[in-house]
Amino acid sequence: MCDTCGCNLTPGNRHLAFKPVARGATAVSVLKGLLAKNDDQATHNRAHFDTRGLLAINLMSSPGSGKTALLEATLTALKDEFTCAVIEGDLETENDAARIRALGVTAHQIVTGTACHLDAHLVHDALHHMNLDGIDLLFIENVGNLVCPASFDLGQHLNVTLLSVTEGDDKPAKYPVMFRAADAMLLTKTDLLAVLDDFDPDRAESHLRNLANPAPVMRLSARKGTGMDAWLAWLREQLAAQRARVALGRSRRPAIQSDGQRYHHVTA
Amino acid sequence: MHELAVAQALVEQVEAVISQHGATQASSIRVCIGPLAGVVPDLLAHAFPLAAAGSRLEHAKLEFAHAAIKVRCETCGAETEVAMNRLLCGTCGDWHTQITSGDELLLESVELETTRTLAPNS
Image (tube, rainbow over all chains, first blue to last red; front, side, top):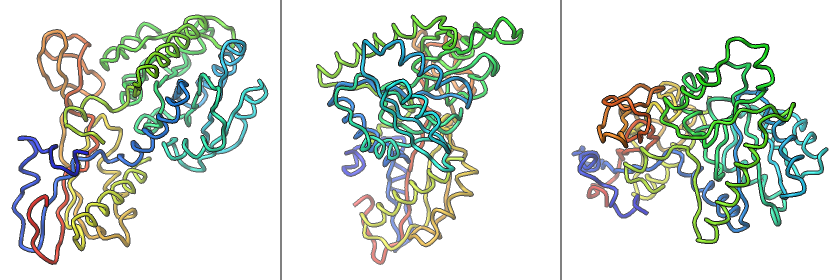
């Protein structure tokens, strides 16, 4: 690990490591991700997933944008094809897990109390309450919040960010950290576009591109069933890609906090 | 709102550095937070004393290094400074860019109080 051998020192940061200080004091260069402990746990979670060849997807969005409704429609459509499991994150209640269990699908509810996001440790604890053997797809429904969940890696392979058409098409511009982390963006509740005159799906997509994000954008209505085919096809494609990676002993990290840290030679 | 969780992670990491170097306490801590990391430096500065209370870094000064948002264009190769919600190449306007700076969340360096003088980075 580079934080112990000193090879993370570069011409750009060397002055920090060897800053002259008063006698009796010493300066040490650390250059380690602040969330290294969370990231280590996330890596461990990802190893659990990869060992079983399953694909883990983190669903993020505002509260009420239709994450659970999307899951209900998805699980119903895929029930004869794949074995799925769900981890639900909410501040309170078992309501969402109960909705998933009503479909005959394994679900574990994480009740966060006041915490505004899931972290890798909460997800790891949840995994100990679930049997992952034979699972193909694991969905993690994060706490409804367009801010904090984007900063915490849970061990998932992909981030899917939902934007419902009742929210406003400039959300990617207002919440760049969240939408930059998306491996796919779903515009949900599109059946309501007929009665809304201020949401332009093309504008939402162009705000996403302004964040240099090449993620596919899919438009759907889980309640009416429109646009679900493209989403289901994307899931099948991603599961096949995950199985191909696992066969080669590789894994995949989501689009979350990646590039800048790599340029800083940080391995944590 | 999650800055307290980040402050707690910071305290744990600095405690580990203190132990690793056989120091008695930390006198200053420097972190680098890019605007795209999703952590607000001011909120972290407010959360830090709560997380650090009773630890060997409760008297440490918390300093922030500024990181500008920069992207490198995959099309024309230019590296330009950009706004948080417009990560397009400043030269040719293409959106096929890579962030080279601005999403860091790093503990950069720690200044330690020791009872004896240690060699730097020993």
